Structure formats: structure tokens, C-alpha cells
Length: 120
Image (cartoon, rainbow, N blue to C red):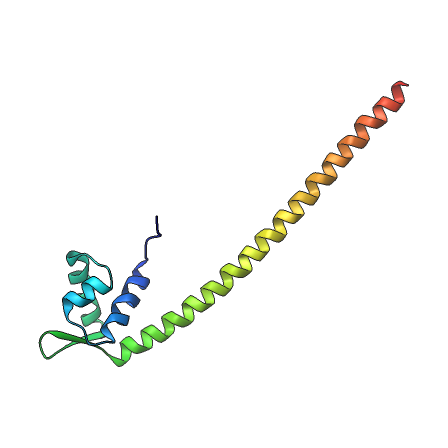
């Protein structure tokens, strides 16, 4: 099962479709939204001047909408870089954890064997 989109991703999806001068139903299908969500987001994005109606049935991306898409793409790239770095750090931490466990096991081994030597 896929992951859910957050609000910013839904907005970016709508704006990406709007960059092709679609009708409202095209936005709904291409951005994969229910009619209820589409109506809510369309009002928000129109009020925020990210999209604008044109010739009655069509929608266009405004300059502010284009800027939003550019900034969103930059944000996604930064997020991917940070996640990749975090993955590397988690692997390094796991290595350290494994090393410390091995050392503890070795210390336990030495303690057990030194007790056996004391008994002999």
C-alpha cells in the first residue's frame, strides 16, 4: 500500500496539472482527488492566487503558483538529500551498536573463562 500525500504534495500535484490549462474534472482525475477534496483545494488555491480560472471552464497556473512549484521542487530535493544522509547515519549507528555488542560479548567471554581458570 502506498503512502498518503501531505497537504503540500496535494497542492503541488494540483498546480502541476494546472500548468497544462485543464478543466476542473481533469484536475480531479490527474491529481487523484475526490470531488469534495478538489472543491476545497480549488477554492484555497484560487483564493491564494496560485491558480486562476480562465474562459470559464479552464484553470491556469499563476506566477505565484509557478514560484510555489519551483520552491516545492527545491524542498523535495533537500528532503531527499537529508533522508539519504539520515539513512547513512542510521547505518553508522547500527555498526557502532554491533561493535559494542561484540565487545560486550567478548568481555563476557573473558570473564567466564577467567572464572574457570580460577576454579582449576
